[in-house]
Length: 393
Ligand code: SDX
Image (cartoon, rainbow, N blue to C red; front, side, top):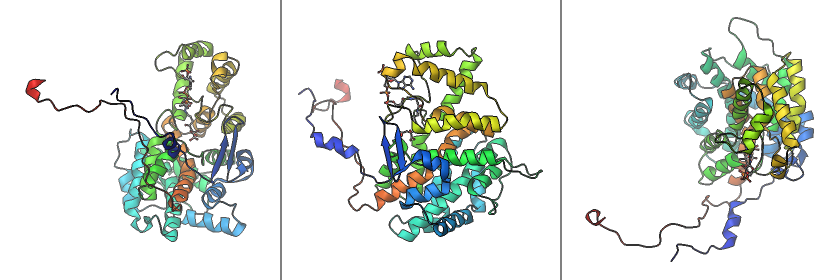
């Protein structure tokens, strides 16, 4: 009569899923894509090679890699009407809202790539979304700053031409900076997949209704935009900038975090799975200093970030809650040094996560036992009662 219902404990397990793509050990701080440690891939691989690995399950042969890179490159151009569509959003629109709309709209421009069960069509959608999200992401910056949308240059690599399409000025020769290209390629690798996080689970659950890849990924982009998830990299920069503007007192800020003052959270710290240092954060932190120095930029916010980390790693409050830096804590400082605005940080996260979302969606679609996502609930509302007419209330 109290409204409490008993629940078969087994139903809770439907919330988990099996996958062969990414392995995480949260206690040991381990992350592997298809068995390969993230540290080795970040050091030795390239973003498109990692995309191939996540999607196809094995590292490509030289011929396979060349064919994959060439096919992605060849599809980087978008329909002229799509460029017009990208220009119709308000200049000050948040790029994550534009990105999810644009990715969803791809299905209307490329209807021949929608069938989720035809292998050739799925392969085409895979290449189209990898190629065109690179163009879309560059256009997010260009439309925000009011600069013309550039066309791809197939003679350049994926990351190099993305940076050119984003930052090149129509009136000068663009020279790419190898440090920036290498650093961004590494950051995209680090973001490429992360098993069943909020946005990937969203991609899976939308796809489980047999929705096409674009619709599923667009939903994932929306999930990623939240400040507790991918939006955290933008929130970290806001947090560091505010602390700096108020005098840069890291200890005072950490006092406010521990007092749980309204709206005061150490963004870029903590994780649902990692109860140890996020291995990606360790790699980013190591390269942050080097990249900023190579770019000839010293950012006092990096010193502040390292100061906050130092305090957290020696303070019982954070230690007992197992709060360590996650992938979002240092990445924004590198993106900022590259010339990206804060609002572009999460679209860059999404660009990096594309191969993971594609791989996870394909794995689910190819599993004949997949059922439509429908988590069960524990009902705690009112017990049965009779309707009362409005005059009698
Ligand atoms: C990503 O899942 C993934 O894999 C995601 C991701 C990926 O690659 O896809 O890794 C990317 O989303 C990384 C996370 C980015 N988000 C942030 O940096 C936002 C700040 N972090 C949090 O809000 C929080 O840590 C979460 C959401 C990431 C994880 O939250 P949990 O594990 O559910 O922790 P919780 O909310 O249960 O908190 C446990 C305790 C609480 O204190 P008590 O109530 O026990 O006193 O830890 C505290 C929380 O208040 N806490 C924090 C904190 N995170 C947790 N306190 C201060 N600052 C924080 N950041």
